[in-house]
Every structure is written in structure tokens, then in C-alpha cells.
Image (tube, rainbow, N blue to C red; front, side, top):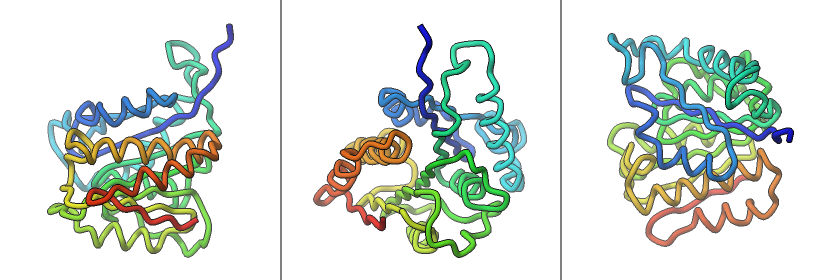
Length: 226
């Protein structure tokens, strides 16, 4: 039987191992997505010498990973990824790399949706270029983040083209809501999956769920700008 090709999500972070996001990544795989969370040679938890200056090169690293996965001709992922349904996301400095590849020049036209969790514009990403509409964006931000100011996420969200969504996690910190801290992790998992379903699977019902799942009294609020 021929396997049906499915959508894919790429996810990156800075000085953290991808497995620390296992619960979130697993939520996406359970929803039918192929998830790739690569280690980067100079900024990941495996790096023998950490070089934050290498962030400027990481958009091209991400482009390489996407191309290699799509080119696989053997192994469990061969032929499993639909190259027309790809999303790219990141956390913290990883947002910079993701935004640069999705919205920068030259942008990667294979990417259909972007996710940015508690990030900031750091080195590689230089702006959205003034377009009014573009690749859909889901930005999430803890309101009590002591590492990246919420103002940074709010600023790039305001400048981003539509359609876009801003999930504010009330009282959440920088890393825990994407790794282990409940109930925020559950909210992020549900809202991000809804977002992916809308823009990678074309699920109309997921749009209604997205607004509902992102509005939790005392815990989360969502801004929708279609």
C-alpha cells in the first residue's frame, strides 16, 4: 500500500536539546505531522564550543534540513513528507532563524506557516519588508518572561503580515510553557495544532477551535488578525 504523504513541521531552539520539547513535539506527531527538530553545530546543547554569532547562518541550515528530508529515498521518512505543506517554528533565539527563512530574503517558498515562541529579532531576521499579507504566523509569549521581553514578541507580531495570531500566556515564563509547565503547555499544544491544521490541512473547524482553545480565563488570551 502506498503511504500518504503528510505535512511536516521543523522546530529549533538555542542551547537546548530538542528532546526537552518532547511533549509539544509529540502532540504534533499525534496530530499527523512529521516533526524534525535538528541539533545545530554551534548553538545547540551538543555544541562543544557555543558560538551565538552563528545564528546568522542558521536559516540556511534549516533550508538544508528541509531539502535533505524531502530528498530521502530510503528509510522510514522516505516519501512521507508533503513538500507543499511545511511549517517552520522556533523558541527563543530559534524564532530569529525561523522568521529569517520564512519572511526574509531570499525566503523559502516551501514554507506555508510559521510559529514563534517567546522570541526576538536577534541577528538573521531583519524585518518583514512591509507586505500586508504573507505566510500565516502564530506567535506565543509568556507575559512574565524574564529572558525575552514580551514587548519583543508584540513588536514583531505588530509588524508581521496577516494572517497572524498572538497567544499571550498569562503569568508564564520563558521556557517552561513549551516543555513541561501545565496548564500552559497543554494550551500551547492545542492552539499550535489548531493553527497547523488550518494552514497545512485546510481544516475549517480548526479555526474555530483555535480561537476557543486560546481563550482560557486567567491563563491565556489570543489575538486573531485574519
